[in-house]
Image (cartoon, rainbow, N blue to C red; front, side):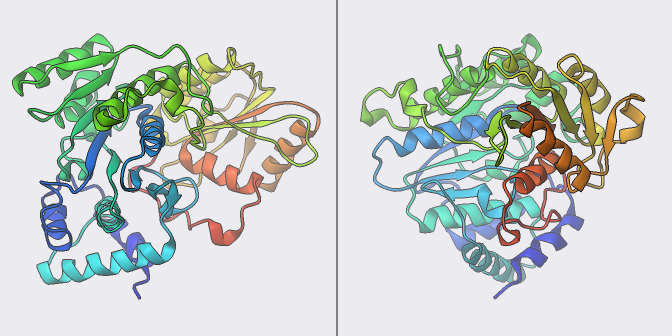
Length: 414
């Protein structure tokens, strides 16, 4: 059987390949007709911040709708295992299923004389597995942009647009308008579109694209509260978007309300961890751009979270100095760069009195966190998925077999 980890790692050299024509050719062999006429209802979720939480809430709500088959959920990136990206009935895809499907995809690649990128082969794996499982509805979170994202290979029944902000400018454009254009491009004629309230520059572009395709965008107002299981005012906006998608995808099950979203679990989003023999808590959040950090900071006070220190680290293209400056208004910083080739330069943004650590595997950092929580303090860990995921694994003492090598990460860092 294929060494699927080696195969995925080798595909990093392909980088990011915009467009999905090659992926479509492969899928047309593996699951004929599924891209144009999916055998399940499809929601595509695009945006900059909150699309993962929105996707998780929508899948959680759909699971309560009593549909005839399981619910599929495709997200990125993962925190610990690649299989977390592909969930069927709430369960991450097992390694043997990934290996089996990657082997089938590779056979088609050889026959067609093509080669899929890292994200494309994972998208293919997800779609093949969703078809095989007989899913009744599937939620696809776009990986990068929308217009040329691999998830756009499938015809969606409903499009959800989460908050749009600056991120991945090298790929999507350096203005809100340009980024909004890439994401709004997934709007299709005759298919409903729902969006969070957007800044004027993004809304203007979304409305223009929708008008060109004869579609009216429904902008949802935030719910009165966030779902039980998630914290932060921003989750009220994400929840409203998820609820709109739920009502569009499952109209025959009555009128779902906000309680259908309660109980959702989405690690790394203001997630609390209680360590052994500790009176304090560690809070984990993957806010990795300035807009995400602003939402995180706004959520702390109302949630009663008062960290004594913030462990922060992100990638160099995420405006780390500006993010650090905002976080310093909340608590002292401990700086630890994630284990990634494009990591931030700690020395360039650190103040003379701030503690610096070698990275998420630094025993001194882990000891310092544990000492703070044993004293009853709260510690906030935020920034890149690579930092948060690695520290989460250490703090939960996850078995090495439950964690994939960090080399199995997207070519575009988050």
